[in-house]
Structures are given as structure tokens and as C-alpha cells.
Length: 71
Image 1 (tube, rainbow, N blue to C red):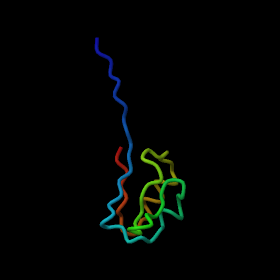
Image 2 (image 1 turned 60 degrees about the horizontal axis):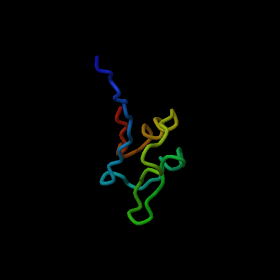
Image 3 (image 1 turned 30 degrees about the vertical axis):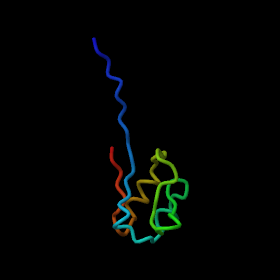
Image 4 (image 1 turned 135 degrees about the vertical axis):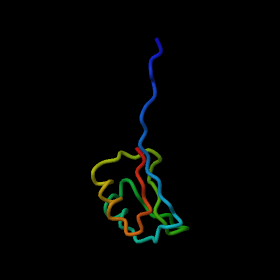
């Protein structure tokens, strides 16, 4: 019998090409998003953030719709 040890991973992807640098995501979730000082685009604070309801809200409020949550 083979046991499945696969974990379902959820990740956040930011399309920096589409990002306008408005900082909405940073204002809503500063523990997950920050602004890159060089590109002035959104980036993740950590590679595997805790995805909460606040993160889903920040994604929904992104005016450029450049942030995706992949389940």
C-alpha cells in the first residue's frame, strides 16, 4: 500500500509587470506584503506567508488585479 505524503500548497504570485505600486496590499497586510525599494513594486515579506482572510481581502482590493492566490 502506498501512502500519499503530498501536501497541498497555497502560494501567492505577484505579477510585478502589472503592479502600479499603489501600496494597497501593503496597507492592508504589512505582515505579508511590502514594497521593493528598487522597483517600487509589491513583493512578499516571506516566501510562505500565512494566508488569512485579510490576505484574500488585499488581493480582492488590488486595483491592478496583479496578485493571485494559487490553491
